[in-house]
Amino acid sequence: MSPASTGASTTVGAVTTVPSAPVSDSRMAPGGPGYRRMSFALFLAGVATFALLYSTQALLPLISGEFGVAASEASWTVAAATGGLALFVLPMSALSERYGRRAVMTASLAVAVTLGLLVPFAPSLGALVVLRGLQGAALAGLPASATAYLAEEVRPRALVTAIGLFVAGNSVGGMSGRVITGWVAQEWGWRVAVGVIGAVAVACAVAFRLLLPAPKHFTPGSLRPRVLARTVRDHLANPLLCRLYAIGALFMTVFGGVYTVIGYRLTEEPFSLPQGIVGSIFLVYLVGTVSASTAGRLVGRLGRRGALYLAGGTTATGLLLSLADSLPLVLLGLVLITSGFFAGHAVASSAVSKTATTGRAQASALYQSAYYIGSSAGSTAGAVAFHAGGWAGTVGVGVLAVLGVVTITVFGTRAARIAARREPVAAH
Image 1 (cartoon, rainbow, N blue to C red):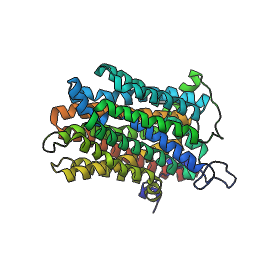
Image 2 (cartoon, rainbow, N blue to C red):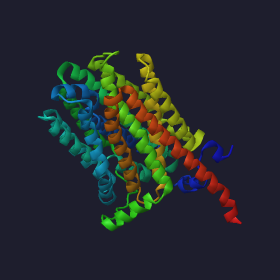
Image 3 (cartoon, rainbow, N blue to C red):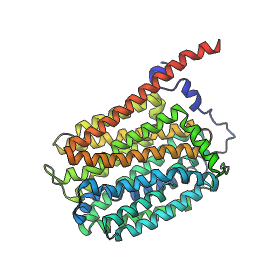
Image 4 (cartoon, one colour):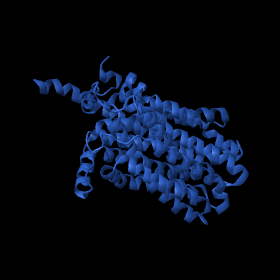
């Protein structure tokens, strides 16, 4: 079966495909020296990042109750963090080009965990939102630097798997953060709950710094604004990269909206679940851990676009199932949404790293910026839609975002097929 019929890259693939690494390649590979340490270190970085970034998401009903605000206002404690990350990820990626991936990731985690220990003492909703925004800005040094580190230090054939493991750490951090905060908050309140997450993140940050191997293939770049602007312009002029950025943003719009609002839905009629049980719902993130870590095999079988179609269809099916007033069906819907989202995110983010042959940190930063803009937009739009039309409104926002993913992927598939037909003509 041809690449076009499977959804795999054709002419575009010629840009993204990297030749197999020679035997003498000194970069890391599964089973080789340092690979396990590197994988575990970045897994822990992913855990800390998502645990801190979304530490208030499962607690929004309690925050609403303490400060006397609606879901749309409380949701800013999530949107501010993801928005801060989206705004600062590009500048932080520039610093990583100059001072090194490991140095920037270490500094980012150090500042973020310090702010995480201050969050429980926020005297007002406004102060809480400000602290969360600063925390998100600090965390901006992690995502783009991590994917750039992997692109430089890991052999091309192992890149999708390595990035999938990092994304899996994101899912474990998101899951554990929400589960822990749910049960702790039920007994001692939301402030103690976010304090516990801060302490967990401190432990992850220390282990990360001790385990991550020193980079061997990093070459310092320039901090000159004109050089950075030219690199960003070149990336934004690449149609494939722009499509991948949009896909990441749209997938995260779904995910941000669903998980910002689900706590309100499950604590209200007809479910009326206690906070601890609501927090435990986030155990479905384990499904995301599996789908992200197996994204490489999925791409190998279906091609990048085939994997994106499957991820989008899985997410849409989950959204529709979640409309039922049956807890088992809602849970099944969340499983499908989570599985589809993490698979789509792992596929898109790894494709960005393969496509960008220069300025990888900026390419990844632009993806992460779009991704977290999608999270902020989804959190806000999902909460507003829930206030206006209930859970069906939130699902409507998600379905529109999935349709956007499918439309972009169809366009990319069509463009690749047209380019493939023109290539033989050009050769003559």
